[in-house]
Image 1 (cartoon, rainbow, N blue to C red):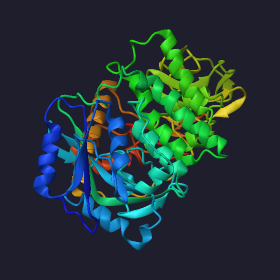
Image 2 (spheres, rainbow, N blue to C red):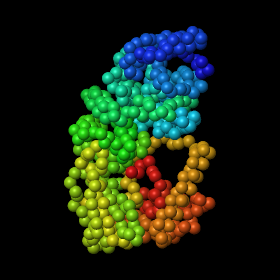
Image 3 (cartoon, rainbow, N blue to C red):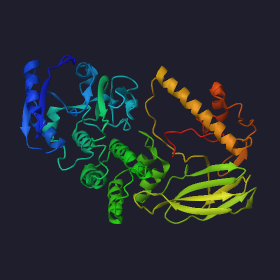
Image 4 (cartoon, rainbow, N blue to C red):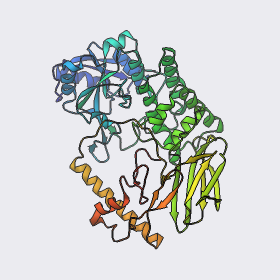
Amino acid sequence: MRKRRGRYELEFIFVDDGSPDDSAQIAERWLDAAARSGRVIRKANGGVSSARNAGIAVAAGDWIALPDGDDFVGDRYFAATADALLAPDSKDAVIAAANVKWFSEAAGRATDTHALKFKFADGTRVIDLDREPQAVQSQAASAFFRRDMLQRDDVRFIESLSIAEDALFVAEYLLAAPSRRVLMVSDAEYFYRKRTAADSAVDNSGHNPDFNFGRFERGYLPLFERAESDGNVPAWLDMMFLYDVRWFLPRENDISKKATWMSDADRERVLAALAAVLAHVADSSIHSYNVTSLGVDHRCLLLALKGSPLPAEGIAKVVTDDHRGVEIRYLFARALPVERFAHDGRPVEPVVSKTRRLDVFGQTLVRERILWFAPRSVVTVQLDDHAVALESSVYQARGLRPRPRQRRASSATRAQAARFLRRVAGRARAELACAGARVVPIQSAGAGTRRRDARPPLDQDAATPRDEQEVLRRLGPHGSGERGGRQRGVPLPSPASA
């Protein structure tokens, strides 16, 4: 009742989806007390998609919003959206998207840390997804849709799916829309509630068959097939799918979330479902995806599943180069390539080598080769007669799409950065103490080679919390250095790193 409406009249539709309590009566009393336009629909329990479809069927407004029942919105949510929709520049927008924030019940506060917050870096504006496909809009709960388009194109939620139904609804709506112009309303705040009890549908999705199979087999695959039959799979649809997969695959790296309960047949089914969708996804989209971080190892797996070659760059790295020896790793698909290693132009062989499988749903396509050479070896690498450039510490994704610029960091953000730098300094001191000797940085010297850097070593005195800028200077830009000449040091995480 305290929310500002703006220049629109509001209609409130409550759907009682077979609740066992007095929710419907509470909603009716609220409508009477607030003297607001609206109604309460009672129906048998059918799930969130069924409830939303029931509300869409009776709505009378120009725009429809579908907020989740356990989330909440900011004071200017409606007013800011109404003002933005009525602006002249917004007349051809087909979606209005709110600025999503996380709200933690445990902490009792909200944080502006959502992965897609970059979309609002330039304030309220209209973007064209055909031109900026990385500005993914995958959530229906935080968006407004034109009712006339929903009715004209008969766009509804898939009631038989309980995972990814939002993204699939948005994608179907956009595929049928006359444009892909989305109004980003930076002042319309939507707060996604993270429950203390961790009992939401998202929190408990791991064992849901739709989480691992249904959303790909009965959701994304028919959608991509329809888009391709219409003559074109848009890049924004690729990005939406990859954004979903980006949260799906890393679960296999976390033992608490890994699908250890699956049978071999289940794992094969997951990989087959992914491969079927990936057959319609452009290689260039996998290479350039930059909506969020996506590990190079997972990019390689996605490419391998669709039968495409791995990237030519960024898939080999020097992990360790110290008194213990030189550790080199690289990713490859299917057959082991012909390896040639050289030191000062003379062939050398690794002291120890092994091959490990990327442990994702039992896949056998992508593997990692791990090789150890004698200390102080400056090793060049050729795989199948092609020289391979060695990255410093981490695999590097190349050719990423640019993202909209971020606003200048707030004081809170700068404080977080300062704390991070202190942790980096502490890590540097710990590593130096373990090594028991001064570490001489190493710099890249062309494809597959490493050479000594003339800079002084990063010693213990330089790595103090009181001199964070000196730590950064010694480590080089972004911690892992610049492309084409990386200075080795304490590696800092990068969105493009794996």
